Image 1 (cartoon, rainbow, N blue to C red):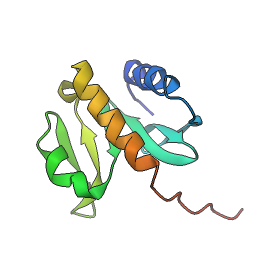
Image 2 (cartoon, rainbow, N blue to C red):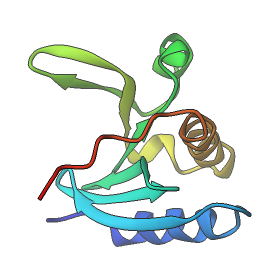
Image 3 (cartoon, helix red, strand yellow):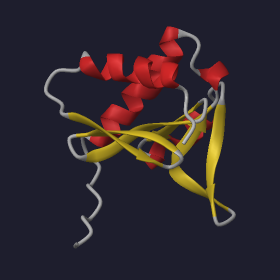
Image 4 (cartoon, one colour):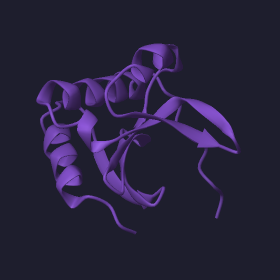
Length: 116
């Protein structure tokens, strides 16, 4: 499972600055996922960020530098995308992605737990 440890550290550090949230980490999606309050929020996949955001923002985020649509079974998965490294270099750009992920996390439904 190869992912950018530098990017993971950057996310970890940024999330540690947010008051009132519980952050856990889980290896998934060929990388490292950051769960906020028990819900998948943001991931590191190889050198890319994988974001979960409100689907209503799709047009806005698609115009951002580094945006890559997330495809599943040949269709674009709205509310999810990858962000290539060039879209994360500037602090303001990185902050944008973290903010939209955290904003959506606050209203997103948690996935159902699998019964063991």
